[in-house]
Length: 100
Image 1 (cartoon, rainbow, N blue to C red):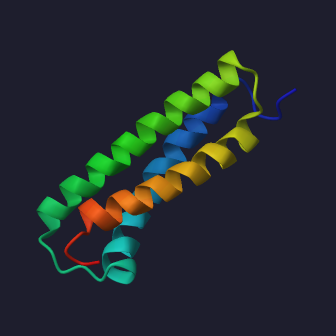
Image 2 (cartoon, rainbow, N blue to C red):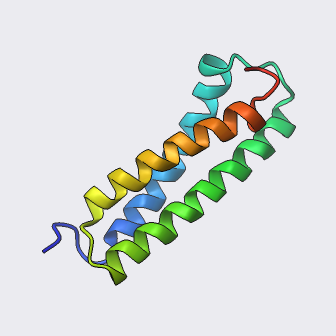
Protein backbone atom coordinates (compact mmCIF):
# COMPACT_ATOMS: atom_id res chain seq x y z
CA UNK A 1 0.00 0.00 0.00
CA UNK A 2 1.36 3.37 -1.03
CA UNK A 3 1.60 6.28 1.39
CA UNK A 4 0.98 8.73 -1.49
CA UNK A 5 -2.56 9.01 -2.92
CA UNK A 6 -3.02 7.75 -6.46
CA UNK A 7 -1.26 9.95 -9.04
CA UNK A 8 -0.52 12.70 -6.54
CA UNK A 9 3.06 11.53 -7.02
CA UNK A 10 2.94 12.82 -10.62
CA UNK A 11 1.79 16.29 -9.56
CA UNK A 12 4.47 16.34 -6.87
CA UNK A 13 7.07 15.39 -9.46
CA UNK A 14 5.96 18.16 -11.83
CA UNK A 15 6.03 20.95 -9.25
CA UNK A 16 9.30 19.89 -7.66
CA UNK A 17 11.01 19.42 -11.04
CA UNK A 18 10.10 22.91 -12.23
CA UNK A 19 11.41 24.51 -9.04
CA UNK A 20 14.55 22.36 -9.05
CA UNK A 21 15.15 23.09 -12.73
CA UNK A 22 15.26 26.84 -12.23
CA UNK A 23 17.64 26.44 -9.31
CA UNK A 24 19.72 23.93 -11.23
CA UNK A 25 20.41 26.22 -14.19
CA UNK A 26 21.60 29.08 -12.00
CA UNK A 27 23.82 26.95 -9.77
CA UNK A 28 25.28 24.97 -12.66
CA UNK A 29 25.96 28.03 -14.77
CA UNK A 30 27.73 30.02 -12.07
CA UNK A 31 29.05 27.54 -9.51
CA UNK A 32 29.60 24.20 -11.25
CA UNK A 33 30.74 25.15 -14.75
CA UNK A 34 31.55 28.86 -14.23
CA UNK A 35 30.15 29.51 -17.69
CA UNK A 36 30.54 32.73 -19.62
CA UNK A 37 28.65 31.57 -22.72
CA UNK A 38 25.70 33.50 -24.12
CA UNK A 39 22.72 32.81 -21.90
CA UNK A 40 20.23 32.43 -24.76
CA UNK A 41 21.97 29.56 -26.57
CA UNK A 42 23.07 27.90 -23.35
CA UNK A 43 19.59 28.11 -21.85
CA UNK A 44 18.09 26.49 -24.97
CA UNK A 45 20.43 23.52 -24.60
CA UNK A 46 19.79 23.34 -20.86
CA UNK A 47 16.01 23.35 -21.36
CA UNK A 48 16.27 20.66 -24.03
CA UNK A 49 18.13 18.36 -21.63
CA UNK A 50 15.81 19.37 -18.81
CA UNK A 51 12.59 18.57 -20.69
CA UNK A 52 13.97 15.29 -22.05
CA UNK A 53 14.96 14.27 -18.54
CA UNK A 54 11.59 15.35 -17.19
CA UNK A 55 9.70 13.44 -19.90
CA UNK A 56 11.66 10.25 -19.33
CA UNK A 57 11.24 10.62 -15.58
CA UNK A 58 7.48 11.06 -15.68
CA UNK A 59 6.92 8.26 -18.23
CA UNK A 60 9.12 5.73 -16.46
CA UNK A 61 7.74 6.62 -13.04
CA UNK A 62 4.15 6.35 -14.27
CA UNK A 63 4.80 3.01 -15.97
CA UNK A 64 6.59 1.46 -13.01
CA UNK A 65 4.05 2.66 -10.44
CA UNK A 66 0.77 2.29 -12.32
CA UNK A 67 1.49 -0.79 -14.42
CA UNK A 68 4.02 -2.72 -12.35
CA UNK A 69 2.92 -1.71 -8.84
CA UNK A 70 6.18 -0.24 -7.59
CA UNK A 71 6.08 2.16 -4.63
CA UNK A 72 6.40 5.80 -5.88
CA UNK A 73 9.01 7.13 -3.43
CA UNK A 74 11.57 4.35 -3.91
CA UNK A 75 10.92 4.21 -7.62
CA UNK A 76 11.56 7.94 -7.96
CA UNK A 77 14.71 7.58 -5.90
CA UNK A 78 16.14 4.98 -8.30
CA UNK A 79 14.92 6.66 -11.51
CA UNK A 80 16.05 10.08 -10.29
CA UNK A 81 19.52 8.83 -9.43
CA UNK A 82 19.99 7.34 -12.89
CA UNK A 83 18.72 10.52 -14.55
CA UNK A 84 21.03 12.72 -12.46
CA UNK A 85 24.00 10.78 -13.79
CA UNK A 86 22.88 11.00 -17.41
CA UNK A 87 21.99 14.69 -17.26
CA UNK A 88 25.35 15.48 -15.66
CA UNK A 89 27.14 14.08 -18.70
CA UNK A 90 24.70 15.77 -21.09
CA UNK A 91 25.36 19.13 -19.46
CA UNK A 92 29.10 18.56 -19.29
CA UNK A 93 29.47 17.52 -22.92
CA UNK A 94 26.73 19.58 -24.56
CA UNK A 95 25.02 22.31 -22.52
CA UNK A 96 28.12 23.75 -20.85
CA UNK A 97 30.71 22.14 -23.16
CA UNK A 98 32.80 25.30 -23.63
CA UNK A 99 32.87 26.01 -19.91
CA UNK A 100 33.90 22.56 -18.68
